[in-house]
Length: 371
Image (tube, rainbow, N blue to C red; front, side, top):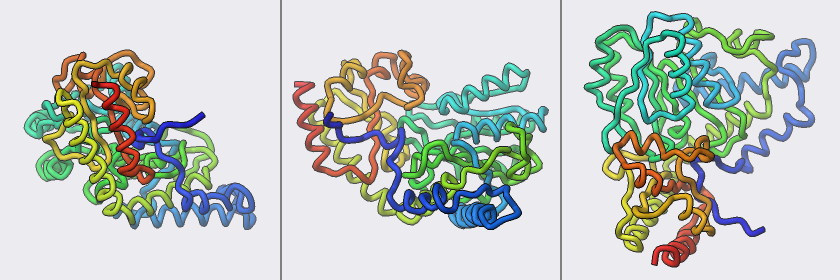
């Protein structure tokens, strides 16, 4: 079967060859358990974990001991939010209506446990109001959880301005950086928790991390052998950890080149789509966005039907985690869009495998569909 060309890199990315090459020895020869302290196989595995922590710390400007390896951003978010609130039940939780479901469902679960929770509204670009956030911060000690880059629209939230508020208010900041790593520079210095996944940056699936400023403020969610300072028990996934480390380094080293590559494709796509179908419009176009995501409303179309007709390209109508639902995007409706326009919106996301030649094939496909 001939596969369509791929424009869904915000959902997942292929494993980079450089990442695979570094992982392979830990599947075969160096297959030891990092918890085996009495022989060289275990020592080699432990050494790989220590090196990964050290090199990740260099990229994110955090301390070596502050990284806890997880199965992905979803687990990291659960560990950060539940783990903190369980030890600090007097804190309120402030998040945003346009967050990923990995955050929204945890916040909803905390609300069921009688934790005070607030979901900030967003404007028509998807941005939170700093004034509204400040109003909530004035009410007491808070855990603020915000997605740095929105996975559906590519919007960048004003994180530097949120960090400035820490000078005036007593709050702990968790950032979901899943779509931010490799797209914008990361400095963990003024952040308390940061979640991310490897598979968004050409690393292995099922691998992520939570960077934690103060380990004493987190209650573990997975108990067992006491690995990772008792914060996340279980045998460490050494190939995955090595792959995560390499993918983080590659994403950081190639950040400028990646953004130049994707921005060129994104701008070309948006300009040509609007020329071919003038009723279309780009969501969050007036906000600061990352280079690799474009969310376009094809007004008057049904998005599911349109995707079927655009058979030469692999795209989505929102988060990969919500693709089986029949509801409109909660992100787009939170931005004030009608359900019809939300249903008519498609997400295009770019990566290293895309070229302008691919776009020309898509444009021809689109012309045949909308004419």
